[in-house]
Length: 428
Image (cartoon, rainbow, N blue to C red; front, side, top):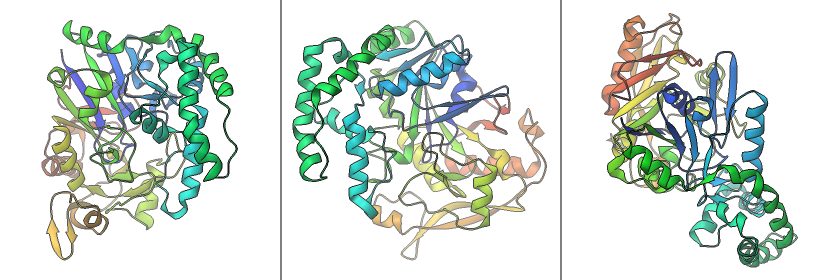
């Protein structure tokens, strides 16, 4: 049985939670491999809606073991709060595993994140203010705090003091903020240690053994391809690698063990935060997509910027991730449009460009070139097979598949768990 990577093929919010949950009943492990509680998944089970921020979507599938990998940054207060909320709703969270090598978000990381964004003013990146970037920065600067450090108070104290030596200088002298006392941070972190301890494990060893034993392991990205720190619309990106390669480093599994890479595509395009967005709409169509699609960030609470489908971005995602399949979500949102524009290329300085430009300046000035596809008015939420879709909806899906460069193997036709058309099995 395969090891699969499932990731966003746009700017995030494509519906990864629904896709992961769909597979959850057939999967033994679901692994978050990057990001933190700056991501958000909405999963609808029956008449119940669950908003997950840090936990893998597989936690809602009874037979599945959810894993937070070493590449994730973990806010312990958020982790415990989210677990408590699920437990109160009758969800069994006891099988969760957390890598001892995952880095911890501390109160000083969130403080630095928020004051930095305010300081940048009009040049701000549009972060969630949850300390994600500063935590990853500490990781790279080798002054980070890891989950395993909670169980050696001496090491924890040394690391917190070392991290604050520099940060307090910045907070006081640049931002005119009061210095943070290391002892208070250590004391707070230690209050989480025993509560988290039952979940802490050598997840790299567990996952590699599971794959070798023929178990099904699904690696779940937290954000989309265009938010990747290396391959996204830098600097308007996240601080980690949600692309397929990030699954290997963020979970400690070699690339030869990955058998399929599934990209989640929304039938239109959305984005949260600042940065270029060629197909963004500022008219009644954009507002309609936002309203009908319920386009509000699960974690941020911010309205998402909305636009038409961008095939250039989809082709780019196929290339940098080595996508084998697409899961197309929210096709039902497009019901009712007489014609649906699809961006097939860009115009940059008077020239037609069909691949994503590597130059940040070129992409910022890219103007979408649209092809008009006929729409449909029929309700598609009850469709169970591809043949059940209206002919124009079928043609739309086939056109997107041809433009994007990988087969569309599943289609979301509604928010519910069962409102999905499966064309080809992801587990074959």
